[in-house]
Length: 74
Image (cartoon, rainbow, N blue to C red; front, side):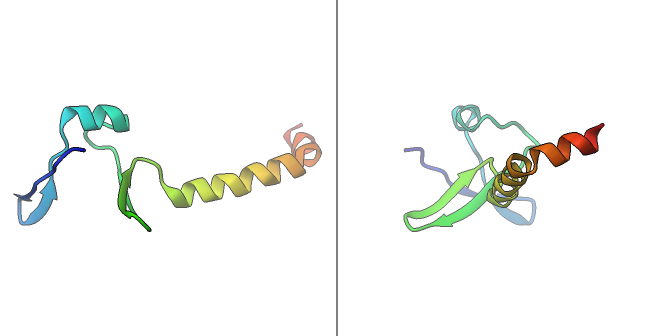
């Protein structure tokens, strides 16, 4: 477990993520992180859950309509 401290950043509050945490999340300065609520508390992740849901739907359409998509691509 990594302890994070809330600090002042400009006129806002924020947390500083150590290099090790950034490396494990595979993110760098300027990347977006998403805070999601779960039954256990909050999770910080680089993956957008809404985008993942959209991609799951898109994969289903591509799988079910493969022949139509191939014809449109010609």
